[in-house]
Length: 362
Ligand code: F6P
Image (tube, rainbow, N blue to C red):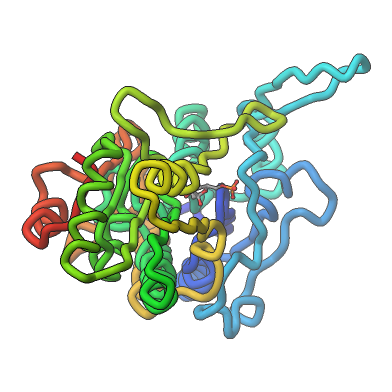
């Protein structure tokens, strides 16, 4: 048991994922059993720079939240204390490193350790703060499932369920109108959500960033279906997918952040142009992040929360909890943020899709 832990803090950073509240609850309950106090920082690190931005979390504050989506602490994917935007008098934005202020604020609050729940961006911040001396333990979250060093992140399977449900529903309207439906799912530069939901939802074509596609192959598959008398098709397009020789579509937002999106529309237009088939496209977008976690994600989030408290207790700082089935264990934060986990081309998910005759665009 680490001798000098009395108070810990927790924050949730980056895009939300179903299961964040379950982590918060598990952390609070497990920490209270060790006699510690828990404080929640609002909106990632922003709360440290604001009045009333840090709140006491006791067991009453986390009652009845395991099944709720979102996060009771709020989150942001703009609040990077290592690159804090400051607008000058001329309107020009410059960036400041406020990491020392983060550490000072936590010292002022007499916080002995921080549990940082986040995706790759938030965990990179946590890693830097650890290197500057803060006692940090990370908890991985993202619907994209693209974090190396953990077999799964919570939120992913709930997002897959939402996407699969949408694909199931698209079948009847596609068949009724003999249309090709192109549905865009999230996942950034990894095709996990597309592969899992596309397979479970029996899509005809799945396009992922790991396999640049050829539109001719996609059209051949669609034409083959119509020729067989199956006069509709479902095409799942990962938001990060792109054609051979092309690149992912994104727009750059104020603050320089890239937002992926739009490839399903391009694929749909190309299919119509080449085959004359009527197509429609839709983007599932943030629906995939919404709602409560499914039972598996709740459980994984609770396990991660309890394990994170155990790591703090054991003084295992600079680590992240990770699922290595059937266990939850600790991995160095540095290792966790070193690379993106993409869909392995020689893995069984791709093999299953190919064995079933699903077109992957190549
Ligand atoms: O990382 C989670 C995620 O939902 C990605 O799949 C998606 O590209 C991105 O976040 C969207 O971010 P925002 O909520 O800022 O639009």
